[in-house]
Length: 84
Image (tube, rainbow, N blue to C red; front, side, top):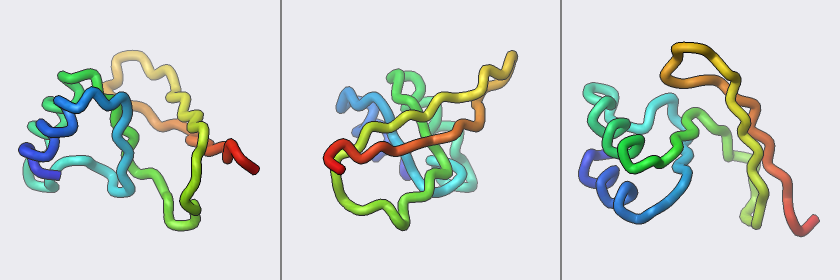
């Protein structure tokens, strides 16, 4: 994601932004994108796998591990289909 796109997301009052790659920003300079989103209190969920998820309405539970002193954490993300 470009810094310009991150600024648009940051100003849109979203709570969480998920993506399938291991980082949200460009590989050469991801920090500016992270700072723009995290500065707007947007939670980043990186490395999610959505290939086999059909379109629908879901509840997402993605509780992170409590790692002291870390700037990120792995989590076990679980989608619950609300209409099944």
